Image 1 (cartoon, rainbow, N blue to C red):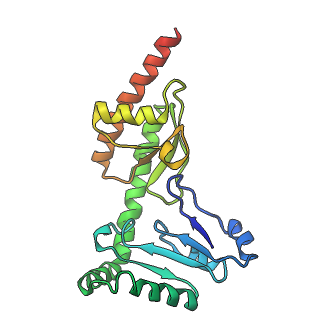
Image 2 (image 1 turned 90 degrees about the vertical axis):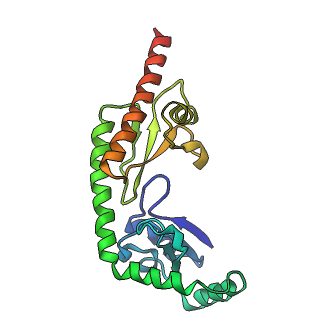
Image 3 (image 1 turned 45 degrees about the vertical axis):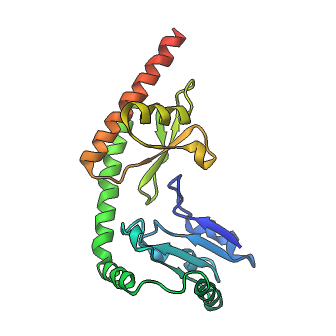
Length: 218
């Protein structure tokens, strides 16, 4: 079995159609985490025969407390998963299932809100990033976060996030926790006023660290 994550956390990148093709020629069960996928026409199950898609109501819809999700795949795989689940959690709460159905009945509303949050947030973040070249983001492909390379030679991404937490009480994930030191993950899909405030805090710390490095060089 191969377990993938597309759209990907933390890089924000997404497989294109051609990148699924090599997996179609194998006898390996492909399971893709599609938590941030909104167009299921692009799902792995549309490209790799016999594959599985897993997702939930936690991210795009904003209901992690319901603890509900789904798996789409071959009937024999689904049945084995259902049978295994009977030995671990027995059943879902009927109340939570009803709430989950109520969310899915309004799916288009939630998706429109999510897409608008992505559009507004990326616009604000992109404009801010042009004035802070020390952070170089990968453009996200349908995810609510941007993965940024940190260009502060004397400061690690871990140190940047630590300074940010200490000075500004703002939490960012350093790339070190993903096995990618020298990067940070920024969640930009936030209300514009909240995002603007967070970016101002980040900017103050980045500018301060850049100034210290420049002073040391001179």
